[in-house]
Amino acid sequence: MNCDDAKQLIMAYLDGELPSEEVSRLKEHLAACTACGRELAEQQRLIGAIKALPRAPAPESLARNISAAIVARPSGTARGFAWLKRYGALAASLAIAMVAAVLIAKSHKGADATRQTKDAPENVIARKEEQADLAMTFEEAEEKLAEAKAADEAETRAAAGEDITKKKLASRALEADAIAQAPARPVFDLVIEADSPSKCLDDLAEFLRGRGVNIVGKISSRRSVLFADLSRPSVGTEYETERFAADRRTDIIDQIVQSGKFRLAKPHKRGRPGEAASRAQLEQGDALPALEAAQEATRRSTLAILVVNRPAAEPPVAAEADAPAAEAADRGIPEPTQPDTQ
Amino acid sequence: MERRSVNDALDDVVLIQRCRRGDTDAFGALVERYQDDLFNGIYRMVGNYQDSADIAQDVFLKAYQAIDSFRGRASFYTWIYRIAVNTCISRHRSLAARKANLHVPLATAGEDGAPDCDPPAPGPQPHQEAENREEYARAEEALAKLPEDYRIVVVLRDIEGYNYAEMAAMLDCSQGTIKSRLYRAREMLRAMLA
Image 1 (cartoon, rainbow over the protein chains, first blue to last red):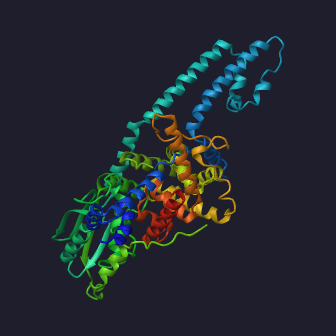
Image 2: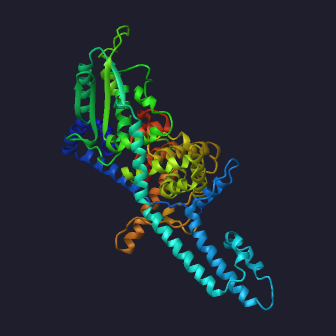
Image 3: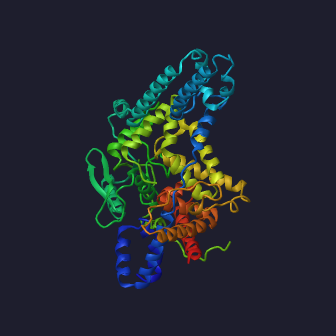
């Protein structure tokens, strides 16, 4: 590998996008070339500077504005966000205490002491309780405030623990429902057709291993299925182990489709994961997202590809000679060009 | 942003199911969870604090209105971030004249109305902290000066952590275009920061 080649690959290497065989070659070159080593360090420093930029927190008014916009929708009978109102309930209790204190101070004059506090923002919520509370003493108001605070704190604690139990039970119930509705057949990420499914499985396994994917197993009896583990890199790759395998799944499926080596079974369109009939049946109702979430918990790291026999009338698959070009295009390296001037 | 756990993803599914049944509080919980990350990503793409707040509000409202169309194939955050990218791009096309002149570097904000943010963990010495702030301000200025197409790919890759395939899907272009654009963007940043 020469320095020009190396410079082309350094960016993809730092981004974790370089195939394993290229990583080894690049590392060999970097070990021997100080100029490219400096290039690597400079790119790494630049990326680090961008990643280290201070985070901009959302404005405090953002959630309130979103809540107001949802409530204001013409079709909506929606209420605003309860977590904003939790603070409003406490403010309402404070308003009650304020109103009671003012009334007591002016009780002998008979003045409408509520007028000056009526328009305070807190009283918008307290207004309904105002009439009933006019005779309340200050001590009673204090008591009510303490009760409201305690209720608010309890609600906050429950919300923070966020009925974790309830949520987990709810999500497990959804999972159980979805799994119960699912047909016995597994849901495949891709369905490929080939003249010889078992040979195609071997080609597919080799293709995926070359991209750093762990092959878990192949079945070649009644069905030809390949399972790959997307969560753990094969030896020698730089692939992050923390990434969601769903993201990796999309990437791998994209590479398989774009390689031109494998033919998607009809009627599945190019570029979309082949959807077996079992998945199509799940499109009804809410089962699909729940099933996907449920399956993600266990299938998040698994890629499942089914290979079926190509129907006899279909023409043969594209020639092998096209594959290297397609593969090279898939791993396309950017041409260094002069940056635009502003 | 940090990738969320499987439990968080399951929580999101439950919240989204509740949103679909008209539970606004559930959507509020999603806003509370993701507003900071989303706002930060938008701010880095757009470079203007007030515009970023408007866009973030717009994005969440669009997500609320379109919640039935979320299929769960990507994470909820990726879905709303994609809405954000598209919204930023269309806004840029209609507000091109405003985009550059109102940028307030976040690393030195406070004087110009945008609130201070928490700086990343600095070294113990005050002068080192000042140097870090200056370095962040330079990097921030350089990022803001990039043409938007180049700035977006840097934000998607180095701030949001998306891979080339995800970026290509979000921006509806090839991975080759992503790689090329990212390479040029980084070369421009290096030239500005040299």
